[in-house]
Image 1 (cartoon, rainbow, N blue to C red):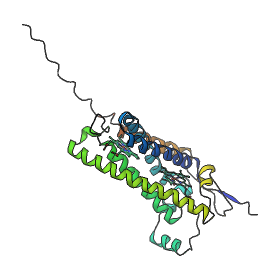
Image 2 (image 1 turned 30 degrees about the vertical axis):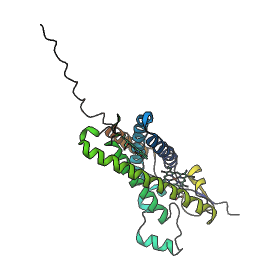
Image 3 (image 1 turned 45 degrees about the vertical axis):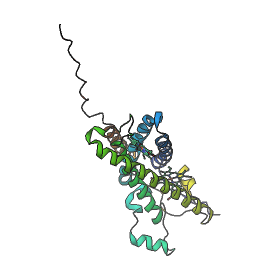
Length: 229
Ligand code: HEM
Ligand code: HEM
């Protein structure tokens, strides 16, 4: 039996993935229920801003198989994959398309949310920077994108199930443990402590920027002076 195994997904990529999955499910549920949960929805949304910013930096500074350049789906790679001739490790070219699609959609989802309003009492933290009519348009887009996101997540899960059952390629275990069993190739390298500090710092800056904490305080309502007569 081939007991060879390689280190595929580094710990930050795995933590990113499972925290993202949890946060996206929580954001979809809290957004749809709305009402009292909308404040929480905004906070979960900010956490997703940080996670996505982290992953974008990690796509350049992370370890081998987490890097965008490693799995960027060029037309050539997709053709090779569709011809059944792709022999690589990490995200396959079609999987990579969905990874980029998910990251792009999550970016658009969070950006629109930051400027959205629920027509009742809750507004995204950057709402004050735009007009009410533009915010209404972005709120509509936010809702539309959330439906596309749900469809993409369902497709994501379906693809993983097909891989496991039809192709007998169990993708979930490496995303949990980091190890790919029965594979030959180089174990992941790079993505050290310095890269992690840079990625976490940029994620923190992204959350701060998105939180609107840097915006000037809105002026206090003018109190009427009591006339002396
Ligand atoms: C809302 C839920 C989810 C979202 C938004 C999501 C998103 C993603 C993203 C962005 C990646 C790329 C990972 C990276 O390179 O950083 C990924 C990969 C992966 N996800 Fe998810 N995921 C979700 C739920 C799940 C669930 C529930 C499972 C398991 C049942 C799962 C299993 C996997 C696996 C196995 C991979 C690696 C695929 C491969 O080997 O190419 N995901 N997911
Ligand atoms: C991936 C991240 C996010 C997801 C999946 C998501 C999902 C949703 C969903 C499903 C709704 C309900 C849409 C409807 O049916 O009316 C919603 C509404 C809303 N979300 Fe998000 N959201 C995300 C991020 C954010 C962020 C970062 C903010 C702001 C901090 C935000 C602010 C809002 C607001 C203000 C509404 C109410 C808009 C309306 O009722 O039309 N969202 N979101």
